[in-house]
Amino acid sequence: MTQADDSMQAGTAADGTVPAIELKGISKAFGPVQANKDISIRVMPGTIHGIIGENGAGKSTLMSILYGFYKADAGEIWINGKQVQIPDSQAAIAAGIGMVFQHFKLVENFTVLENVVLGAEDSALLMPSLSRARRELKQLAEEYELNVEPDAKIEDIGVGMQQRVEILKALYRGADILILDEPTGVLTPAEADHLFRILEGLKAQGKTIILITHKLREIMDITDTVSVMRRGEMTATVKTAETNPTELAELMVGRKVLLQVEKDVAKPGARVLEVKDLHVTDDKGVERVKGVSFDVRAGEIVGIAGVAGNGQSELLEVLGGYEKARGTILVNGEPIDLTGAKSDGRSRRRRGIAHVPEDRQREGLIMDFAAWENVAFGYHDDPKYNRGILTDNAAIRADTEAKMKRFDVRPPNPALPAKSFSGGNQQKIVVAREIERNPDLLLVGQPTRGVDIGAIEFIHQQIVALRDEGKAVLLVSVELDEIMSLSDRIVVMFDGRIMGERLPSETDARELGLLMAGITDTDRPHDAAEVEAQLARAGGSAAKEV
Image (cartoon, rainbow, N blue to C red; front, side):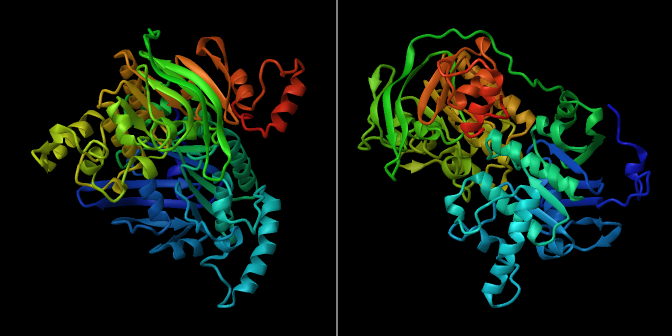
């Protein structure tokens, strides 16, 4: 691996360019936890600089210091060659820094325009601010491909559009430096592709972009330079063109990492899950799942592929006991109730179903509760957690501590609230809770969303190990690579229907992408140009995967 040239460690680049950002000796501790330790980094203007590292490596803490959310215990911040003090986010904005957080900071019942103006009003009179913002939004939208309906309410637009609003907020406030924290964690492949076009356009206009991500493909595709963090320290800064995913993964984790899932051929047994003619209608009367039928056998992983919003989430919610449905679902040959009378998570768990939900923060954890309380979440009536009629909190804490050790949760402190852990470590807590229940059927939605490369490898290994113990696994993921590498069979959903079933060894990303766009074998043209036209008409949802 080639280390970035020596000029990157000096005050200016070899051509005399002054860094847009220079952090010198930044350290930050939270009690006994050293989040950042003597970190120095330089980001050149008009570039896209990636920062990668495991969950808990200190990436977000470092950027929160730059944005004024935290105050460093030691170190200096230099912007465009001048040392600055950034005690709060207002000072960061004044210094030309904008930040788009992984979890958006938007008021859901406000319009796009109101969110953009909020906190940046010209005066106590709101109308002149809104009028000016409308003009500027139109100009920014045209310049950077950030088209959003200004009068739409946030609650009525998708996450891809919401992310554009966050970027518009930063640009409206005059940001020349833009920090994005895990920006593609909630985006479809097509939305992520569009985001990268936006970032390229911003770079072409001279903006400086810092991209925090755990996805090595994104780093290789879009960044000019990448810095690697591990356990609160900066381990390397390299030019992206002079490295590769394998080397970066090893720098992140400190050991060799398997980027492909290693597993033996499945040996399917009896049917554990049978779904027959399932229909799901949402509370607005819209049918989301339209007559779906499939099965999952013991000792196999069945992956549900599809762009988000095509019925997979509703399918998982019904199987997990969250929603009502029409049709038939059998578990180990016995029907489960779909009417709502007994349709709840507790009854599912008693039938041997464990569930890792798609949204760990809304459905998998109570964020203000301690880790040990979350490990007991849904399993509080377990005999080993109780002593007579009283809950044995000491037993729960001990069990949580053991799970944290086995699943490498950092920091391994059962008393910390769930919100104090990074996203990847939150996910490990949920996965540990569900997998270690030895279920007959594991439902797992987006198992590695927002999770770093080392944790991805570990979670995949745990899922495969469960399969090898003869358990059935139903996997839902928008990551096509994950579906193809983990699944023994792949079922593709589009618009609430199953478009086809494939074996991973007998298909490829292009064929699956076409099915994800609703294009089947029977209506697929032979002409390549017409295939692309059909994809465009289908909304381009699978464009990046194809």
